[in-house]
Length: 270
Image (cartoon, rainbow, N blue to C red):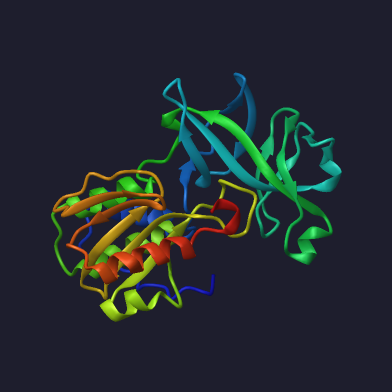
């Protein structure tokens, strides 16, 4: 996706919990849950690997009320043998900076080569999977829940002041070359993609927020989660995701939402 047009950053007149979250997390926007540095990440009950504080992961609810997590990592080729990482192996991000370490010999899944030629000389990419308890996540690091809270809170000041901070915090990007149906309706699309669900540089959307300029939200599209929103006009379950309309859609707008969704779904996810 082309480089986004970043919304302005402002934290004036935000609720205290939201202001605190913005100040802590704004430096590293990521599209997932963040874990604490001390979060125990286990495999079959044993400590498997550790991640730096505020590292993002992809999380899904597990049967024991904890969460199964996935993390995309870059690892040195010399630390890998038959798809198994050695105990004590360093885990790197896309820029080659250490973001964690293994605590046991650990299988890495979906191994691939970095698209960056410099990184490809030394590293391979892959997915690590583990299990955490819900207490291991940093509060307010769920973008869907944070959006519901933002829209539910009594707001002081212009809408865009708070909402632009939300977009920045979670790493939304403005969609370039939006479908003509959106452009004709005067709508913008802000896209939040998964980052750790697959071993790919381009992953499916997690959430798309359609705004009418800087005035307000017209519609929210989520990949899976159905949101409980104030002033919701209509909720639709579609093949491509869950639509939450804060204003009654026209046929043209509905077509624009669908075209946008499919534009943000890579071929391997289609």
